[in-house]
Length: 153
Image 1 (cartoon, rainbow, N blue to C red):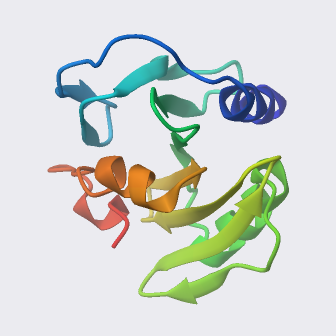
Image 2: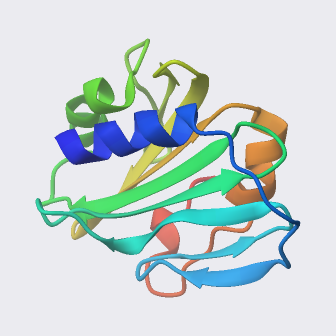
């Protein structure tokens, strides 16, 4: 979790540079994301030392990042999972629960928002930091055939 927090802060602080990239599909094991132009993979999909799966995307034109993190839910309610993860992502309020998902504003040096979804097997935390409109271009492309209930609504 500590590594995740450090990567979040680093991602938010780094201004990405480079030429516009073509949109592309990114297989994140539990979900698939279509990265629009001007977005890149900052941290390739994979597991960290604690066994949590995550990926970080960054926008090249605006200082905006999208972070997806997944792990076992152990059958815990989504509100409990969201509360446990809140400190690590800079939650500024208690999570609001609606339709088996929780959301809360976050701030780790840059304002954003996180949504946590869960089923009996897995949870998915979807966060963005920076410009909401820019982040939505990525967030709207998240899909999953195997775990559609984890896709934030």
